[in-house]
Length: 397
Ligand code: NAP
Ligand code: MG
Image 1: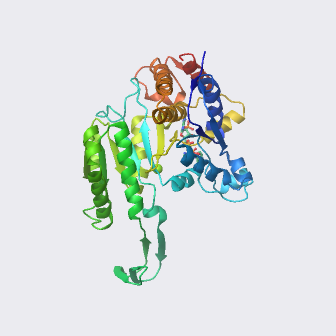
Image 2: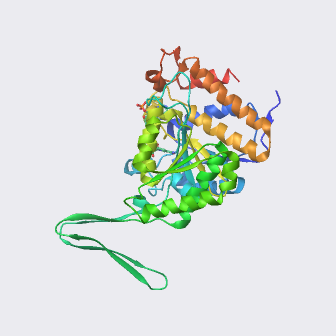
Image 3: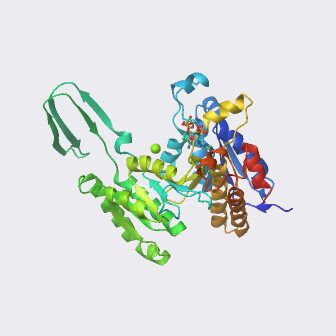
């Protein structure tokens, strides 16, 4: 069999724990036998990040910026427990947050839909993609807890020395305070990434915020989105993509009655919280893909879930696991499809479509991993272990 050539190098980022095990199998059984690809490999496994003082993460991000498309395995974000477990020199930052920062990217999460698993919300027929603005707001806030009464003020000193000052509150007793910010350029990048994604997928854009209450802060988000949409009007019209602004409360209510198929763009906190609700509503985390898109059109594909630590510890004890590899497989197909589209190599796109179809067919034939069993309409034909599921998919290629 002749292998399909991937014209431009593809950036591959390896990861940790159970997803690292799955990653190797996917490559060996579903990718390498079929593709002739120049994979630029970066090992983002925690040990190697620690050995390189985390230089490898920035090298990988730079490679995605250079070549345009990357595919990433889930990685550990170190905490105190991991410091001891891996004997780390430092509590290295989250690789995802670093890559996101480097590419100034927006994260889009999309569920994979199969016929024999119905979403928890009856109205949902098509995938709802969530775009989360991944910069600022409470994630870059400063906070104060006071046990005394006092006056809280918000002061801004501009670079030319001019100051603006408003009173936040006259506290009569103990209280809590927070100061947060965002930047026009980051909000613009977010809006542009959403427009770019919607144009590629040919789906409508919903953007929601709370500008009735936060007239200036959220009002600015609304204004920037409207301006970016207006600047892209011709392209959006040509692709049949509609834009709609909703108050966040209205959007939350509407989404429950809507059949889906839209891109729902949200501010940082809303996106953090509601993307988990949408994921749960569509079924398993193992069926949720994630792609990071930069405003200048660089793409990084991955599964939305983490390293599935609990399954990994079972695996280490020699126990059987049944970990869902679907989102990781779709990270590969997403990257291969995007590479094919950018390189104008339809064979690559066709292969990725075929691999996705093999996954869907496997699940729809009732051969599933354990996480899907309770979500299915009909009893499963077979509960596969981690490797058996990948083998089932491979047998259909
Ligand atoms: P997780 O890896 O997403 O797993 C949480 C639980 O969700 C699992 O224990 C499992 O439930 C279920 N699950 C998730 N993915 C699954 C799959 N593919 N197949 C079957 N079940 C799946 O989250 P975590 O355990 O909280 O985090 C583990 C590590 O991942 C952490 O170190 C965290 O920093 C990292 N993380 C990385 C990323 C990323 O790289 N993008 C994202 C999130 C978290 P059951 O145990 O009940 O079966
Ligand atoms: Mg969240």
